[in-house]
Length: 336
Image 1: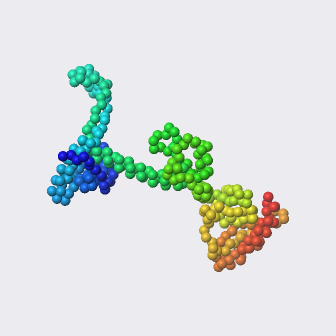
Image 2: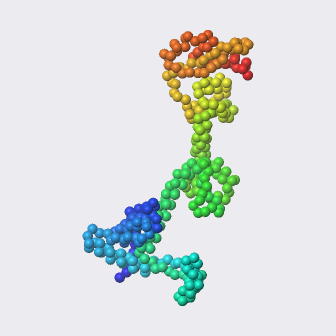
Image 3: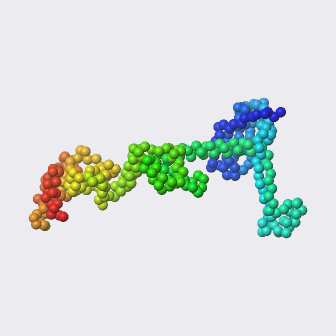
């Protein structure tokens, strides 16, 4: 006797995309009315779904085998079958002579180009297959949701009218108040996924992320250039690799106007905490009047200072940056 109601559930479901070739590769436990009834397995090569009755003893397996038979009958009686539409065409002419094929169709009462609809009766295997596909869709939807939530933390995701299902566009900018205004002006008809997967960031969080994006771009530049900010708020570039001498020259050239050297923050020079800065001063008489020219800066240990005593009188080293500033100020106008 077929029961009025039956409940089917798949547990311990595992899906193997790499093994799915002509069919879905998976394993699962089938529970019928809350009782473990069968172990399911599909090797992914297009064969039937294996349904092995569960149970430790022959008696238990036999009972579950009868339960599968009852479940098969219930599914056929209660679950609608699949409607299929088939259009019958003549075989390709390079395979079968069209006249011969037409004669055979006429003999069987088949009209070429005719369309017929039929209903495939539901079976336990087809029903399990539908349950498996539903679980896979749910798993993929969860994975997509996790991925989209992660992306929406730092990016703006959206699709436009006419896009294929599942396709979307990305701006590598956080979705905050400024981006909301931009999207309304640039893409007023867009379906913005951030509303679903992340919401709108606060203005402070948006600015924080924009600063981080800007710093990443600057950090790349700092590998080959020197970036610095003056008191006018603008950022300037100095061609050439950043070094201690470049730092000194910027300090001398701009003085209090120099707000920051961005390289010091994003791509700092090696730590010289325990070292002493030595500034190289070259005295030259090649111009009138004679000038002190400020040269490179070196960092040395206190023990190394004595190595600079026997320097020719036209080259001198000093640890006094104030002296360097005075000589620079006296020499700089003459060099402009």
